[in-house]
Length: 293
Image (cartoon, rainbow, N blue to C red; front, side, top):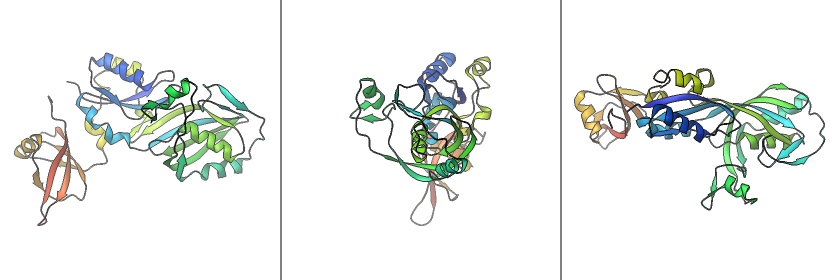
């Protein structure tokens, strides 16, 4: 079974689920998943996991993400972007450059954000966008997000373009609206491209056409999502014990999770290092991705 990760450049007009379905058909494989949903109108990095590598989605789902967004002043929509129905509009005074930079900088750090109605967040077992399509608006609790960096790229008469690096769960559509509020302007997101998810970057992302033309070369190894973890090479006996779900003794690395490889440098999976009474350290299997599983 093929296994690994594909750094997909999702085109605008496709849902993340559409991309997963395309990859499933292209590779004739059922086990396909992705890390970090992108809005249909958005483009950019969408890591897609296939085969046994789908078991590692959780290790990228919480990674920080980077975006380039265009914000347009003067109106609001029901979706928060320019694909929605206009719900409000009014003339605005063009903010000064210093005001724009101050407004952007004010969002750096921990913020609270209310999920938009047109989102996949579930309330009462139903996705918000399903309720929104029925004309319903329900109360949503604010969620904490983290903006690591945000910077102005360019400005024009009708809006601005900015880069942002943020935590999981950040809605850039909502951020655009909130930036508008700080500037006393109505605002929507009019363009969005995701430039990074964890260690997957836009520069290395492949279009669907490129993937179809070089199917095998498009697949990165499953451990490419775990570059932040230290690694350990196990003996044949240790590898067999780990694959059978048993703990082994190891030298302390100072890390909680560790990538494990066998003596042939084949990625086995992830183990957890635990210090036991008496000072000895054990390595316990957490996720095993042995070939053929």
